Image (cartoon, rainbow, N blue to C red; front, side):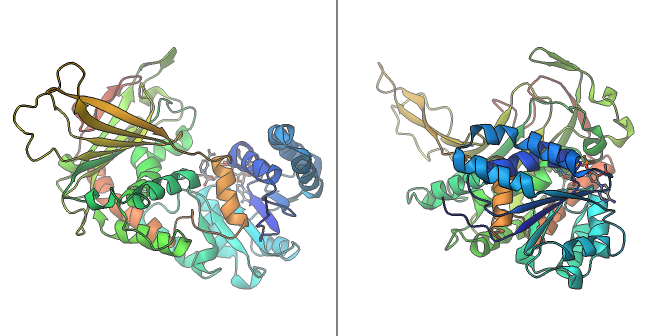
Length: 466
Ligand code: NDP
């Protein structure tokens, strides 16, 4: 494979953190093993006074699995990166410190802010454009701001440092394979496009139900909740990919323009009691595991009324989609993991008299991770040819050999922001959910309960069989 590396140094701030150890380094290891990061130097930095041995040990531990599975060239590339990596202790919020470190590194540099969001913001505020070597790119983790206002402010801070196409706002959820699977399905099949609109589609549901509970993440999650954690930062992007008009290319400019156009037209309308729903899990069992009540989990403050399951109905005000509900739902501690988009078509206008048995409209279901495609259609049943039966056509779509963070890092080191969230889109995703957040803060929408390990509230539109 030809290497596309343009970034020479990957600087990870927050070298001792959870994201770095669990996701970034293993993701990078596979890239290096596949020859997609030749000549890249890895530099870690953190506030801990680590020795270079401590850092090397961390890198080698995270790279071990990829090194074991790699061929001779991959092993050599991993060994070269491990040999050249270095660690620096610094407080990134201290005036001039980060600038001094950057001045000593080989450019172009990608600076990965794997830090608590407030620290990343402070670090960017103390940086100046003059301190950044030519070609520097900045990589920001989620959450990007905490409101449309703060996201706009953060955009301004970053825009004063580097151009937009060198700012990577990470969305590791939307893997490259998933993005291209959706676009390939939609725009390489001429039979779909004529029916992909309000005349033929009754509703679109995008569901990400997890069968994991809090798993010790109260410090972050209890302040976020399902609406911010999943719907704001991930599901709205899937919605945009399902709803956008055909871009003329799948380059970052065309694709991100098309995504942004859809999101600008999107909103959640009042009354919020009708257009939004929220719930919190109570004690139950998921498989063989006992799950405590959410409010009894360590680090949770019940008074925050954090929802662990959220559902919102988004409307897209344009010619193609006016009036079609896009229902986005995500939650934790459900009995069955569901990750899919369900496109429900309108029923036929008239079934010729004499046929019997059609009881549900056609549905196209796109599964995420592994990516699958299922189309429910009606065919004449065996035996009685007047009776229509439901059959499902199943296809498995292609996945990616890289880990999600490998895909993120591939875009960063090759200088392609295609999978990054653009600044205007980050602001719009907050703008779309803000009315719901306000209504919930005023308690205008009740906080319901559901049993951990169950299907969630039975009367929600997305309930299985609902
Ligand atoms: P952690 O709290 O585990 O790590 C934060 C890191 O920041 C530590 O290495 C810490 O070093 C360092 N740090 C804090 N203050 C400073 C400072 N002033 N100067 C230099 N280093 C500093 O956080 P995570 O790794 O979990 O999260 C990092 C980011 O990634 C967050 O934005 C989070 O939202 C995002 N994220 C995390 C995911 C995860 O699964 N962990 C998933 C998706 C996104 P020290 O301990 O030495 O102070």
